[in-house]
Image (tube, rainbow, N blue to C red; front, side, top):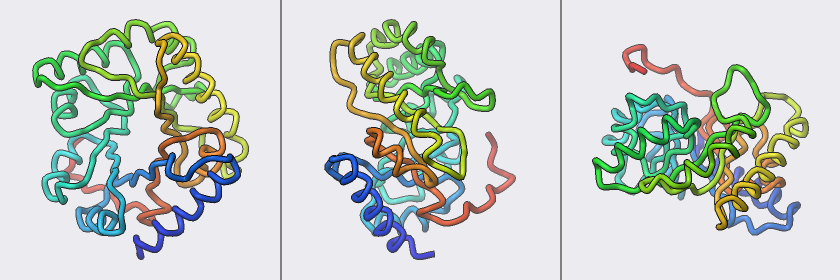
Amino acid sequence: MDIAANIASLRERIAAASARAGRDPASVTLMAVSKNQPPDAVRAALDAGLMCFGENRVQEAKAKIPLCPNRAQWQMIGHLQSNKCRDAVALFSMIQSVDSLALALELNQQCEKAAKTMPILLEVNVAGEGTKFGYGPAALLAEFGELSKLPRLEIHGLMTIAPYTPTPERVRPVFHRLCELKAECEQLLGAPLPQLSMGMSGDFEVAIEEGATLVRIGTALFGARPRRAESVAE
């Protein structure tokens, strides 16, 4: 697997999608989703110019991050359980998957103990899929005021995982709706929210056309994901 060649190809596709939307390609961050990938793969991506890595599980990140170069920047993109908040606060520079007020309160408490301020994204289940986590749009707007008052959390924007489809165009309405929700949240906050994390290997170009500022790429970068070792606990 030529990770550097894959990154170059992805950057070309990001640039083309940005051009179609009249955007600067530099406004889109390419995140490497390193779930189940070994430190050597992370190192290869770093050497090819990537800095931003996303992990889905706290326990895997806890074991992997110390084995990787210090210059890597790590973000939590998977579902976060309340009992993992302390470790998440210690490990990550951003948590993208805040999906309830209860979780936000626990994160705020752990940040207070660590004397740390944590940038977060609010995860939205735009399509209402029963198998996915995330705020429903109405619940997000209802709780946004309380979320924005938590002193140790900085809301930087929204995140979503679109339904899987072999036809990316079908999920364009999901990305469009997240962009609309960001605008509604900005009105409530009275300030801009700079980040829209949306789009993965199969649909990131449509996401960029709809305003994504960060795309989360695993398979198209690293190839088929290796099986996770059975010894890694959730």
